[in-house]
Length: 330
Image 1: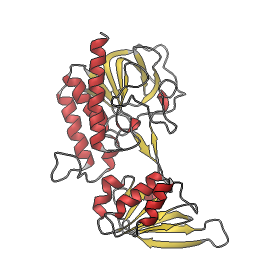
Image 2: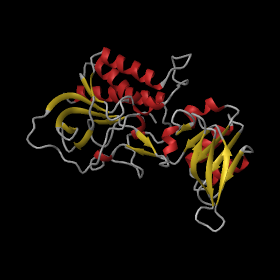
Image 3: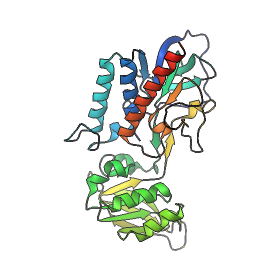
Image 4: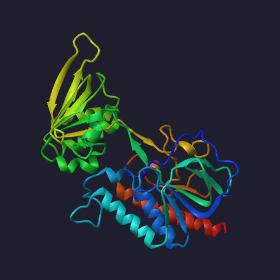
């Protein structure tokens, strides 16, 4: 869940007439995966150039407290952790730049990437660390209470709600998994489901039903959140659009979104193999894509874990895979 949004529509084309900058190793996107790839690539003398994207440091920069990243026994804020990783990458010579990748041509080496619809960069190897963006409901309160009770990652933030009441929004496997995980930490978990049934697999449905402190709110939709600086409750539509529609209020301290993520892979879709959601497919146990010399790491290729530490590990893999590729194809 933690790498930088760095993409726009794939319909944008490469600029004509401008001379391209040639680099050995280009990293698109920051966050734990991108910065770790940069650290390893720089130490391998690949002279990496990184474009951070719209959100330097990735999604982790929106996390107020990180307690599960090894090496920080007292915890650390997301922005501080990302700044540490960035400084470490720069220490070894990574050229870190602000810029948004807006188009790509991966039809042949060197790979061509357009930055901000104007600058062309040609790279011998390309490491994609563009992350995945959590889907939100679009309520103004989601921004208002960001870092104050609203989260899109139960594994990341659930610990802060031990013994409290929380709500999870969604009806698929992810929502069921998050609700069950939180049920092991929290006093009570409301599972807010828009329909009168779960889309989750039968196994997950049974697990939800057997968890005593999960209450499923069927045919409910979120209207708003309320609270003084932090989330204290939610107003929900029950049976919205029907004759018996009503507004109900629940008291909660945490509000978890579990309605999916969108991988930031659009500009590569004409070249790379993606799954049905848009995650880049990599050869298991590697960061290799279907195109030799193009590697993917972090959340853009990981629909399962979405953790800072796994993203960092995959960034290490991408840099090592890139170095070995270059040594074999010099």
